[in-house]
Image (cartoon, rainbow, N blue to C red):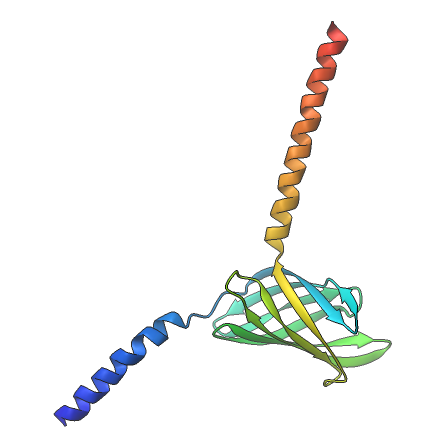
Length: 156
């Protein structure tokens, strides 16, 4: 019995580092995707809520419209599924992806049970929005500086 305890303790300690490094990323938030299907690129948006290993949220694109999504996360991989309307027909859409080291996502998708397939990449919308806001602040600062210069010339 002492040997079993010793062996199982050693096994538990050997598995501990793997357990600590395999952390599930939090996919909650707004995402902007770049989807390529048959040479055409679309940029749908995705808003996700993650609770433990379950995902839910809203998908929106010009091509497939707006839909409620469901999915799951397992370590760094995830799946998302929803039904969309395409040319008046209801079709199943399934995304399979992986979270990259830089926090972006990348993977494949299939529509109509694999009749159409493609690839996608995605990044958090907040990254894109922060760049636009920063550019807006710079432009606003430049405009304010120009207005001050103009007022200065008018008074002289």
